[in-house]
Length: 317
Ligand SMILES: Nc1ncnc2c1ncn2[C@@H]1O[C@H](COP(=O)(O)OP(=O)(O)OP(=O)(O)O)[C@@H](O)[C@H]1O
Image 1 (cartoon, rainbow, N blue to C red):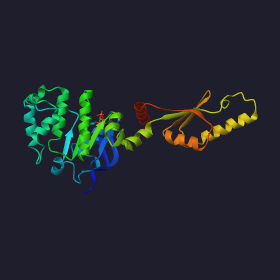
Image 2 (image 1 turned 180 degrees about the vertical axis):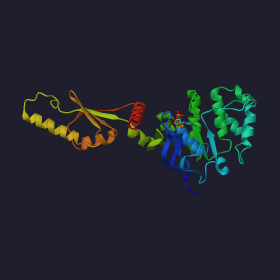
Image 3 (image 1 turned 45 degrees about the horizontal axis):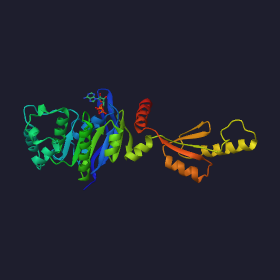
C-alpha cells in the first residue's frame, strides 16, 4: 500500500481576483503528524478544506487515499474537527454520539466515544447546547473519532481550551499517532507544532515558505549568537606596534572567513557572531584554533524569530 495518503499537485484557490492559495504541491505520508503553521489569512484552512472536499481547487489536483476527497470511501476513513463548534440543539450528547456512529460502517464503540469526550456519565445525558465551549470542542473531537478514521483533520483545535484540556487533547493526539493514524492540524503557534508534529509546513500568503521537521524549521529561524573575547589588546584601537595590528587583522580575517556566520559585531573586547548553527560554528572556531576565551552561546526566543520571519516574508511579497 502506498505510503502517500494525501497529494496536492500545483493547487491554487482563488476567490474573485484574490489568489488565497497559490500553486502549492505537497505529499503527506501515512502515520505522520503534520502541522500546517502560519499567520491569519495564510491559507491554512482553505488548504485543509480542499483536502476535505469542502472547497474545490480553482486549479490543480487534490487526492486523498488516491481518490477525490469527497468520495464516499474517503469520507468513511477521515475524521474532522473544524473551527466552528456547532452541536445539534435539542439532542443529548449520547443521542448525538449514536446518530454520528450510525453514519459509519465500522464505528468505535459508543462507550469509547463517550470516554473520548472526557465528560462524566451524567453529562452524557445533558443536552449538547448546555455544554461549555471547551466541552463542546471535546465532544467534537470525540465525534471526529466516531468512524475510527485513518486520517484526522483538526483546524486550530485548541483555540479557546484551557491549558489542562489542551494538554489532554495533545496527549490523545500523540496516542493516535502511535496507533498509526495520520494527523493534520492547523495552528498559529510554533511551540504547539513543535511539541506535537513530526513535520511542519509553514504557510504565508497562500504559499509554502518552509517544510520540514520541527528541528529543521527551528534551525532555519532561530538565531543564536556565539560571543567570545580574544587576546586582551585585540579590539583596542590604540595599538602601540604594527605587530599587534597585524595580529588583530589576522584574527579578524579568520573570524570573517568562518562558515555559518550571518553577522558579526564587535562590542568593546567581545566579538559577537550571529548564526543559525551554533554547533557547527563552535566546531569551526576550535578547528581553526582561533585564540578565543570566555565563549558564550545564547539563543533568541523562538517565537520572536518566528514572528520576525513572518514579517520578513510579508515584506518580500
Ligand atoms: N469563502 C471565502 N470567500 C472569500 N474569501 C475567503 C473565503 N474563505 C477564505 N477567504 C480568504 O482567504 C484567505 C485565506 O483564508 P484562510 O481561512 O484559509 O486562512 P487561515 O490561514 O486559515 O487563517 P486563520 O488562521 O485566520 O484561520 C483570507 O484572506 C480569507 O479572507
